[in-house]
Image (cartoon, rainbow over the protein chains, first blue to last red):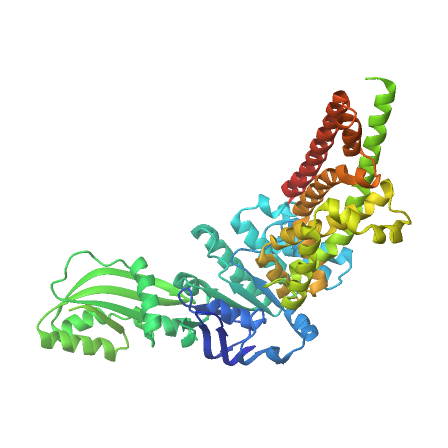
Length: 333
Length: 218
């Protein structure tokens, strides 16, 4: 659906910034595709290159078979109407009501007034704002504003929805509701969603695939379950550490033995691997923390354990885990 | 206050209102497009053009740097060409307009540049043309600021119009000078000033009200 070929972007100036360097990325149709990275990693720039709000210095961007990077102004405007965009700060027109904001892109398309009313009412219902059509943005909460932003982005029935940190200005509860809405839209309308965020939790919650950016370079990309359980790059590991530390808190005391974090994926999460390890390798296992999460519908288990035994026993136990495709991370030895 | 004095005051008020009202309308018509051009050609504007922006900015600054009393006299040939005479209330409207256009244009530029760039970007992401951005985003979003800009311009023109007496334009300022000052009529001076104060207060109040209502609505 969306293809970036060798895309680079540099912001000139006294402190020249290489926002993007040689990005190659393919975003399949119908997915919710996350782009994650720390602030300044270039993820927003990458998103904005898809609809040319930011023009890449080099490389090509293709959307639905159209080479966006080589379009003239008129064709670019037409192509942009096939893409909706949702912003962190909502960017609603303060001088227009909710109705007027959702109607805005439809007016641009020259839709007759009667059809506009019908379409706006449909969209308001989809995002749950049917009773707020005559309100002005200033009278809405953050979550409601973002719903308007989403309805507006969907108004012209785009094939792609670009979301730039859509939940970063929202509280956790509202974030969850907005994410659910995006998920519903993806499922119901079959829309491709590209979502930029700095929060791993957002990726885990709704994304099918994820691309990790650091300092303008693509570190890795793939299905979320893969990237979360077998992170290949240090950037991903760092992002995951912060995310996991918040969810699976480490005990404060100094461990006596070897401290491990074990990640089980899918069917592994259902096998009694720990008890087998104890029996086969005669180590002692102290389970400090455990949790099973859902990720894209499959179980995803995580254990924090303390291993006690002779160095040989410990090493053999570690090998056993690795042979059984458990992701092992030694936190302390 | 006798009937004759009241008559004088009433006539002067009418002249002032005519000069200020006409010049304000004309300044809005002339200054709005210039202000829009200044805003959109500015760095980071939607049609960034530093060459045009600098040229326009220089012309506007030139207009604003000439003291009004001098401008009024300096453009007499132009005034004569436009309205056929260089003396009288109608003639005074020409220099008042010429002075107010660059002033208003700068205020418009300021109001438009206050519009959240994120909103403009959102509009661009929907495939708007620059013209659509101007009349569907910039102007409606800046409307409260634009109303205040008109108010400030009109109030400013009340001050300028006091000098219109120099070319026989009449008005309240002229009345104050000729009667209040030159004929030592302290009462006329006080009355004129009272009317001027009321006029300016009233204009500012109306402008503030409208702007506030527009802002609250949005």
